Structures are given as structure tokens and as C-alpha cells.
Image 1 (cartoon, rainbow, N blue to C red):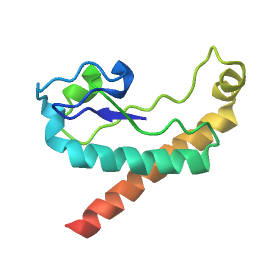
Image 2: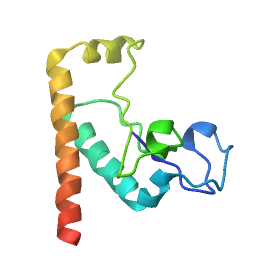
Image 3: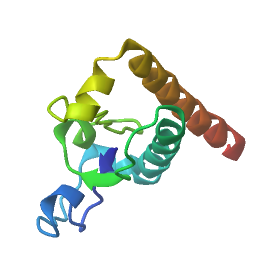
Length: 115
């Protein structure tokens, strides 16, 4: 699970390097990005058993230019023997999809209560 790295911080995938003060449109939503990532990550790790790799920060293009809260979920690696089998299992994909929806709905409920 990835959300956008805030200005001045290093991306998780940069191994401590790459800090920049450059701001992107997606940084406007930083608090919401992190909260959305947390909610989806929590739902996925409970609803579709998989290794929990945590929430990471990165400056991927799909996150930099987002004008609403956004996350990037990597659901596994096809080249990994066990993960590859899960990816090709229709029931597992359905559990994963349900879990993602549940995480988004949990985020939405929490945000609506705060308004």
C-alpha cells in the first residue's frame, strides 16, 4: 500500500534518499491519503489474507497528480510462487476486491462523521 510522500521527506522506496521539497497536487490531500491508506490496508490484511507490508510512501506519478485522496495497492507478485497462485485464484481476487471496498467505505464513514 502506497500513499504520496510529503514534501521534505524521503520516499520509502528510496531507501532514505531522494528527499525533495517539491510539492505535487496530491500533497494537498496528505492527511486524507494516509488515512485512506490505513483504512484500506487494515481491511485488506483482515479480509484477504496476505502478507502485511505496511503503508509506504512514494512519489509515483499516479499519486503525485491525484486531486482527491489516493492510494496505490500492490496486491502481490505474480513471480512469487505462493502469491502468484493467490493472484490467479478467482475467489481470492473476489475477497481482495471486497476488502478494498470495505476499506474505502470505512474511510468514507469516518470522514462523513468528522464533517
